[in-house]
Length: 369
Ligand SMILES: Cc1ncc(COP(=O)(O)O)c(C=O)c1O
Image (cartoon, rainbow, N blue to C red):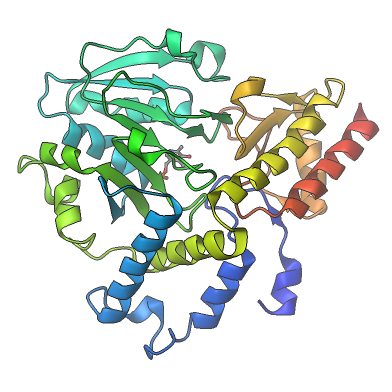
């Protein structure tokens, strides 16, 4: 990065698209005019050419290694965002309209996912936290599953409400489907427990345009010819994620992010400790503010990615956001449905950014408390 643009960079707490590691941005800049040995930019080359096929395979291999995806599962790179998965999953995994899918709704994204199911089969809500304004995840005994659901869907991290499962719920044998859009790669996951994992890349693993799907191979048998081509996971697997033009640049960026996690961070165990450290700094500040700051999520279900809180009133929330922006901390505004403040502290948010925000919070509380 040129010194000028680098020094203009703020601490960016955007919920997504979100902050990227600086070394990834630097590499993109260095290779933008010409990929080494290729003679053209990543933006200019064919997805069928050897150079891009090598990038795609390299990215997939790195992702498999980093996320410890077992051989029982396939990885595909898709477009359409996480929202397309809301339809693709019931369309593919429910084999007929009489089958039922169970949804655990812990926030706005789970609610949105559940809303697509009726087009393809029956929806059964196994738990819904809306009456408590989505401030927690359910205890195992609160889950009310239907008889032999086609699958059980949950949202690993609710980006708007800042509520996160510590680990995926037990489904009693039904395939567990998880939307990990806002916390994939934030910690190690036992992928073998999941039937399908999906995540858009623009929060914790790269840029908009790419959605990664990890699917257990036996579930591919449910994808048959009633499905449109793009909805068919089996076709994407057979076509090497190239049944149409993949989002080439976003695949390249995911590869760089995986490399950063492996080579600079040292893997997902390390990333998890760093994320715990960063989120604890902000939650401790909230808890020790004498009630000035109030966190949204119940303590044990707090997200280590999206820290959602308020000050004593809306006027102070606004003042907080204005002053933070002047102090070089941007996009801290809470989602419009919830208000308040949301600090998204994805993997690429440096510790220094969180410490700067915590110091600002302390000062703000002492001036306005
Ligand atoms: C948990 C979660 N699921 C789904 C989405 C939707 O993703 P997309 O905009 O890529 O469809 C988002 C964010 O936008 C999200 O945070």
